[in-house]
Length: 222
Ligand SMILES: C[S@@+](CC[C@H](N)C(=O)[O-])C[C@H]1O[C@@H](n2cnc3c(N)ncnc32)[C@H](O)[C@@H]1O
Image 1 (cartoon, protein in one colour):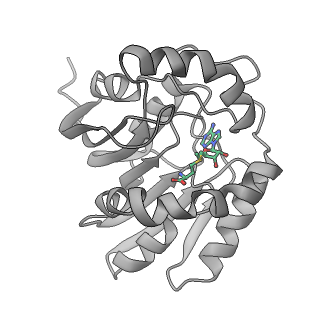
Image 2: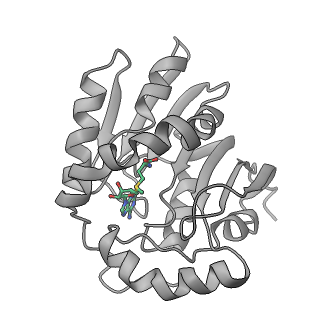
């Protein structure tokens, strides 16, 4: 996937940030809860939530935090980040939030045990750079856990393609037609732990892919 023009510009969606939590509250309580719980199952070590938005994952981090976990998040949109910061400050578990995009993560190599991507690959302008950065900041054996909406088949895909330009403008740069699951499992930096396609959601935001990939250890140098 080629990077988009102006992909270095920081996103800024004040309106979307203001309506995001109220607009998604019903889906959060019903559709999304089990998938967010999946993303935090048996978490251990240093965890990074990329494109954390308003901090929808933060209560789930709070629920599983213990002495062995440490939480970090990135969010490049200042309006989203403001809400994420308020959410983090209102709970017990500290979460250190940075303003960086996924394409340029401000962490050393091999920092994290787990990177979480929740409905964010649809919005990242340069997916290739983001995947490479995630691989860089994960420790060998560390996991990328993801939950993402992707392009459907048949008539639903045609609807998604037709709506995509307008949707992208209204939904903060979100792409309806990404093939995130196939892109991630094809990456040679990772082994597949599991991946599932879920007929979840409502067209045009349907289906979803959910899974876990493990970063390969560096091979022997020759
Ligand atoms: C649909 S929201 C999802 C937020 C959150 N992960 C969740 O599960 O609710 C997508 C988020 O990706 C952020 N975003 C946009 N460009 C990004 C980038 N280059 N890197 C990381 N996040 C980005 C947006 O600002 C937005 O907060």
